[in-house]
Image (tube, rainbow, N blue to C red; front, side, top):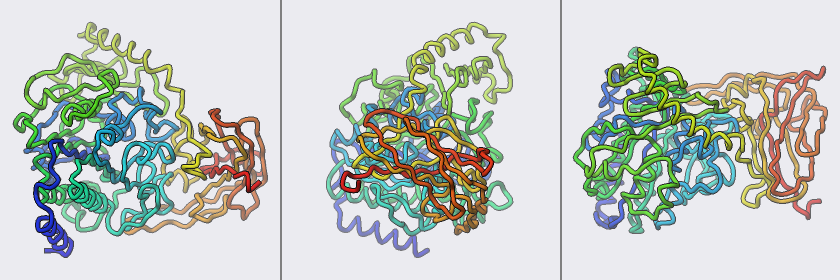
Length: 586
C-alpha cells in the first residue's frame, strides 16, 4: 500500500473512531455536484470506451438514475452558469468563456445562495470560471468556503503567472495560498476535509466540486499516463484515470462517514469531447464548441439511496443542465423563487418514478462570444435542428449523417418558430454587458486581463506569450466617485518584466510554456470616459500609469492600445491594474 493510500485509510479510520456514523445525518439531504471539465460523454468505460478504465465512475453509474439524453452547453462557462442559475446562457448572461461575457447577470440568484439561505453550509473547490473579481467570485455568489483558480484554468490569462498543476497557488476565500500536491487531489482532499467539518457541526451541506481536469494543458503524474501510452492521448487519459481514483477515494470517505445514504450525488461533464474524441465519442458527431450531438450531450448520474428514487436505470427523456437547480429545490425542499425563475424544469417526479415522461418540450442550446441568430441547436424529442437549417432524426440516425430537412418541412417550421420567439426574448439584452466593478471597498485594486475584452477571444497564455495582435474594450463600472490610477502592462505584475521585453519559457513539473516574445512597443494609449491620452513607453518600463477622475455608477468602456514607434497598433494592454485613490493620498 502506498503512503498516500495508507494515510488516507488512517484518516478514514479516525473518522469512524471519533465521529458517530449518524452524527451528520439530518432530514434534509446533503448535496454533492461533481462537474468534470473537457471530457466527453464517451470518456468513461461504462459508456463503452474501449481504452479508458474508470471503475469508480462505472460503479457510480450502476448505482444511479442515468439521464441518457441530457444536454449542456458546448463549452464550459455557459454550462456552469446554466447549472447554477437554472437559466439559459443567453438569459443569465454567462454566454462565453471570455469576451466580457463570463459573468452571471446581477440579481439572478445562484444555487449556492439558495442553499445558504435555507441553512446549508456551502463550498466549492476547483474551477469557477464565472468572473475573476468582486462581485462575481464564489464567495460573492453564496459559497461560504471556496478554493479556486482564476480564468478557465491553471495557466489561463487570468490565472496566477506561472501557476502549476503541482503545488499550485489558489485563492482561499480570496487569499492566495499554496497547496501541496496535484491539483485534482487537492480539490478532493479539501472537499473531504470540509464535509467532515460539516458533519461535526451537524449541518447539511451543499458541495460543488468542479474540477479543472481533464482540461489542458494535460499535466498529470507519470504513473497515470503510463498505462495509456501508445493507446491514445496518454496524458488526457491519465487525467481521467486520476479523476476516477479521486472519485473512489471520495466515495469511500462518504461510506465511512455514514453520509452516502442521505447525500444526493450528481455527476456531469461540462461540454462535448476534446482529446478523447479521437479514441471514442460514443458514436456521436461533433465535439466541444459544436452544435452537433457530440458537442453538448453529456453524462448525468443522480444517486440518492435514502431518497426513494427509482431503481438505478436509464431515463431517455430530453433533459438539460438547467433542470438540475429546480430539481434540487424540490428534492431538498428548499424555498423556491418560483417556476418562472427558471428555464429548466424539475425532474423530481421523473427521478422518483411517479411519472415516466416529461411534457413535450423544445430546448435551445446556444452560447457565444458574440451570439448570433441561428448559431444554435434546437432540440425536440429526437429531432435536432442545427444552425436553423439542418435537421436530424436521432431515432433513425444517431450519428447525424443525413440531413432530413427537406423530408420534414413541418418539423423545421415548428422548431424555427420556437427559436424565433426564444431569440426575440433573449436578443435585447445580449449587448448589455455586465461591467467589471472598480473602486469597491471589497476589492481595490482590481486586475483586468485581456480575457474580458468585449467580443474578443484573447484568453490563453500562448496569446500573451506570442503577443496576439488583438484588442478590445473592457466594460467597467466605478462604484465610487474619485480619482483612479490605471496601470497598463503587457505582462502581469508577478512577471516583473518590461512592457517591450520578452520573458523566459516556463518549465512546469510535467510540461512547459513557450518563451514570451518581445514586442516593439513604444507608446501606450488609454481611453476611458472623457480621457484619451497617449504616453511614451521607455525601453525598461514595466507599466505606464494614467490618472483619471471618474463619476460613480456610470458604466463605461475602457480601452488601451500599444503602438510601435511609427504609430502602428501592436495590441492592447493585456493587463490593467485599477485602483481608487483615497482622499488622504491626494
